Image 1 (cartoon, rainbow, N blue to C red):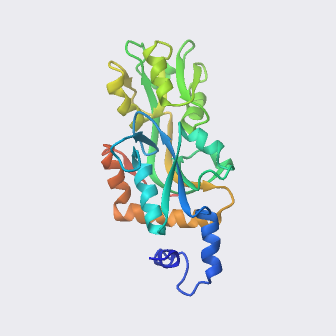
Image 2: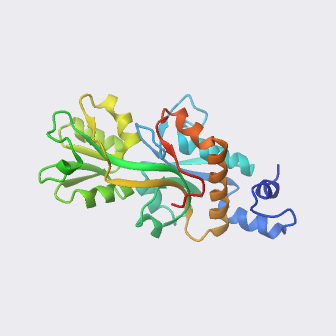
Image 3: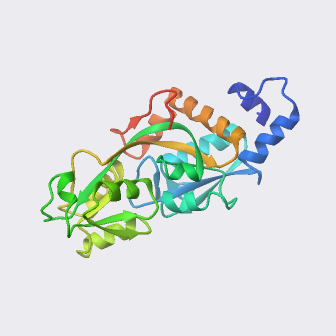
Length: 268
């Protein structure tokens, strides 16, 4: 099906819309002729992070992969995945015309760099504490001498620094580096989403995920600033994916059966 018919089916452009409107959307959403989806790659899956998987057609597996592929299929264009270590790197590249759409946790600082569409996931971030660490609550992380591994320029990293100002932050480029620090005895806690931390437990025997959270937010679709037609289209797509069960299936496919899909119409 052609682009204009897909958009009309989603209620974005009426059947009598001028071709110029279609071209304007193309220019904002996939200016290179393919949909470039920015992804964050990690050893543990979440509503944001994807896994490397040589057996998968795209070479990756995860929620962002499934949503990006479905979005490109809806548009009738090819998909290209642009990998990064974390959402902070994706945000920093937002003005470089490297990617067209992404999926990431929402916070006020990030809204300065990207425009968020509708939320598709309810996010909670907390801490994974090292084996043998004398830490059992969120409050106990906020102590002098506690070393927190936090991924650079992420919503979770910023929230962790605000929640635990007495602790020391060890900034890492990606999740793999945080795991390596904890294995080496150089980090007492890792700050990440609850889903990501649960996936790391098998790699860090004896580590524990704390109850509660220092950040409660959402994960949402996002586009670079100044692309209102693209933003409206991807927001409608996410609402359709939630209503059809597509988001639920994408979460379940990587074992995130306990993750919560955001309610219909939820703003980021």
